[in-house]
Length: 315
Image 1 (tube, rainbow, N blue to C red):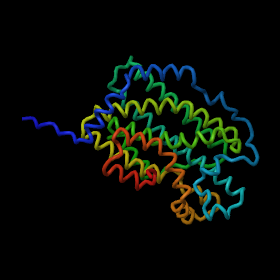
Image 2 (spheres, rainbow, N blue to C red; image 1 turned 30 degrees about the horizontal axis):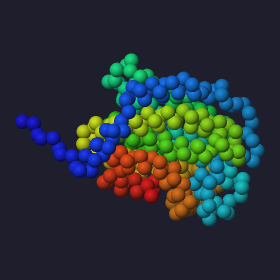
Image 3 (cartoon, rainbow, N blue to C red; image 1 turned 180 degrees about the vertical axis):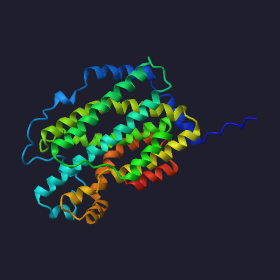
Image 4 (cartoon, rainbow, N blue to C red; image 1 turned 90 degrees about the vertical axis):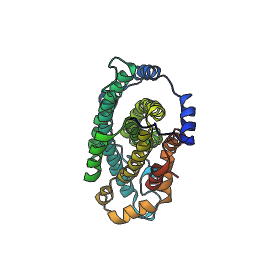
């Protein structure tokens, strides 16, 4: 005897009704993204001048986006030490980006495993995977070019990602994809036009912004579709896993070893970053476009919403 289907709440019904009218044809979206990829894709190995020397006096990251900016500790630091911290934080973010993109590539392969291999949707996913391969190599070269070390995530977060890659549902995968892409994208849109920043870093962020715009569109359209078509248990799991991912992402965003490596007391620096109103505003501003979208499609609810608030990314 089969059990009766779980009834939708009024709120769920409203979200589904509204979302049905917003869904776009999956194949049409993919065809447009494939056309854009053909016109606006880059090979960082040849597009960027990797042999050019570093520019004296320029930043590796806009100072306003450095984690300690405007804290009491920041105001005590020399300009040279501030710029050195920016260099290490750029390396930390690039290391985080490589870690995240390796996860994303595996999730995309899982997503298309059962899909028609000749579909535009699958062809675009393979195109995005190729983009992410180039981005990961580009970030690695940028770290080496700047002379800072690689900053891996903690062993705990590294192993939590193993679990995510194994158990993540399709909507959960796309929600986490957007979390990793959109906040960094917001920061990079401020970076590539900033003439205070090293030309190579500006070139790296420009390429990433142009190509990531397509990845964000692909993930948003698919997540919107999944939040309409997935069973209720999967939507609830997505809300929970996305909230937990936001909490982990906010903790892992800057590796605290950067502070020690520029001669600061790590414990004091971490405490001042946590207390910084400017830093909180930066992170929430970076996440706002994403949180508005997740709220619109019904992801930010219940325990998941509370986890997002605990992460500091949701105002």
